[in-house]
Length: 230
Image (cartoon, rainbow, N blue to C red):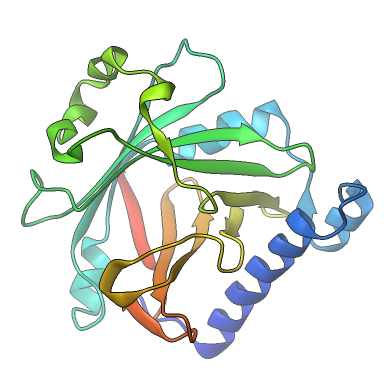
């Protein structure tokens, strides 16, 4: 799936407007009218439950990789609910691996989903303790995580993804500015733009150096992960 320049400009505008809503006025959160004018609605517990449901499952970028092998790889994304009875959640274990090496994920995280006071939702990002590969495959038995607790995790400060629900029901958002640090391949910071629908997640993660030049990540647009299993 290729993205037109107009589509890319629209996605960037969406993330910019979300960042403005999230960080703009220090004295008051954006009101319902302001959000409605931008095409978003104030989120509540039902939206949080819907977001959790849409993010949970197994996703594949196989179709995109087959259509455009020069720009995309065949990746599997797995997200499962952990600690369902623990307060402060929902909590999700996230595992991302090349289809050719499913037992060697290159990214493993824990996400904590929550409502924000400004009417948005957020996905906080946490790193697992020690060598994350020892948790590889735990998505098939999420109760294994009962041996851990949130205090065992390390929050990635500045990397929280802020999401708002658009008028058509889709969740859109991303990280804010240059707040999320990264040293991968000479990067200074990373950004993430996300669109979450019932049947897919579009995720565009990129790394930039101190001059704002992209040094890693897809250049033609976000990865399209189609849900293949709930």
